[in-house]
Image 1 (cartoon, one colour):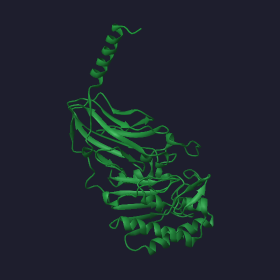
Image 2: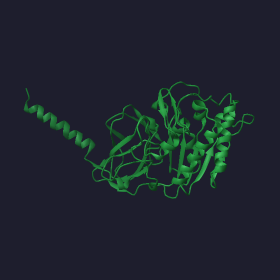
Image 3: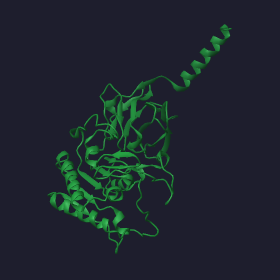
Amino acid sequence: RFRPMDLWRILLLLSAACRRNGALKVYSPDQVAFLGRWQGGRSSSRRCSYGTVSFAVNFRGSSQLVARLQPYDLTMYHTCQVNEGDPFVLEHLSGDLVIASNLDKSATYSISCGRNTEAYYGATILDALLVDEGAVTLSPPRPSGQLAVEFLGDSITAGYQALAQRGATEDGPRWEDVFKTWAAILANAWGTRNWRTVAQSSIAVLPHNSYGMSFKAMKDQFLCSELTMYQPCQRLWDFDEWQADVVVLNLGTNDFVFVDPTEADFEKAYLELIQIVRSKYPGALIFCIVPLAQSCQLEAKWQKMIDGITKAVAAAGPDVEVISTGSATHPWLDCQKDYVEPVEI
């Protein structure tokens, strides 16, 4: 039986919760720097699947920053940073994601977050960012003047097993981290935070079927706002929203793991990909990396890959460069210590 004392206790608990958390307000999207292929308008939720699924804000007068995210199908991982402190990882499945708490309201904060996990596992849907009522939102830390770079690649670009030990069999979101990839290292060396990826484990220049799954060609995923597996692209990406200064392609390994096409077919497909990239980023410098697989393998198929990339680049016109990565006789890697043979991933 309900008693007046029960109501009093409930009110006390609610009052304590309000004092602890305070009233929250929605952060204006105009004051948020979104990095990646985010979709959505000013008054709606935003969604993004391709890396780095990042956002950044500047504010003062709030003790916390909270992201109201729609639930994931499985636990995802996010790397965040407060001011210039050490990056930290937050895992999230459902409910609000508390990015920072117990902040000094008299201080100014610059906070950024991005998703470690690759696009294959679905989109991040951000309903709102929340701060204390009365907080002052400041101009966001947009990376203006920094090199705009997009990386197109497969598992090593997506962050697959980036946190696993060499030769480990673990996979899945727990072991992925796009911020630990060669792309992140290169972007840091170039002094830019204005970078993103279009990447998927097992993707190739050509379409293929593996593990009972159909993988679209990179050219098709590149044109789409987010990665799609079994359905047509729901929304083409608007390339007017962001223009790359540099595009780096690191593809070809999976073509010769899964498909083993003729050199002519691979060259044709690779050239078509370059041409599509050029049509969307007319002012970009395009680098085409020869995948490292060839420098630790003696099979003839890897020479087809090298020749196909080299000939496609030669036919592509100006501002397209091939980046060699050693050879079987002069590998960039210690093939016994550093190299793991490409497998079907």
